[in-house]
Length: 164
Image (cartoon, helix red, strand yellow):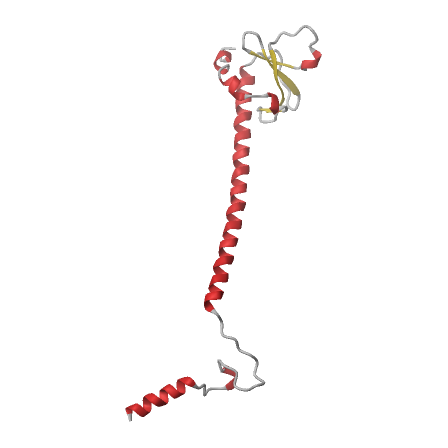
C-alpha cells in the first residue's frame, strides 16, 4: 500500500491537475507559450547592469572630486598671491574690482602698482613684471595672467617681505 502511495505521488508531481489558468505549462495547443526563466542569465544580466551603473557613478564622483581639488588648488594659489601682495610695497589703498600690477624690485621685494608694464617707459623701478592682479570682494587677489606666474619662485621671497 505504501508503494502505491509513493507511485501515485510521483505521478501527481509529473502532471498538473489544478485550474488551467494557474498551470505552469501550456495545457492546450492554443495556450500561450510559457517559457521557463533562465535564472542564471537573469542574474548575469542584473550583475552586469549593476556593475555598469556603479562604474558610471564612480566615474562621475571622481570627476567631481577632481573639480573640487582644482578649486582647492586655485583658492590656495589665490591665498599665496594675496599674502605676497599684502607684504609688498603699496602706496595707495586698493579698490575692489580694479586691476593692479605686481612687480619684483631689484632688492627682491615686491611692488604693487596701478601702472601697467607697457606704461612705464624708461623709468622702470623694478627688476621684472610678475603679474596683473585684481582685488576681489573677499580681499583676496585674482591672478589674471597665470602663465607668467610661478609660485615656487616667490616662496623664497616671502620672508624678505615680512617686515615691509
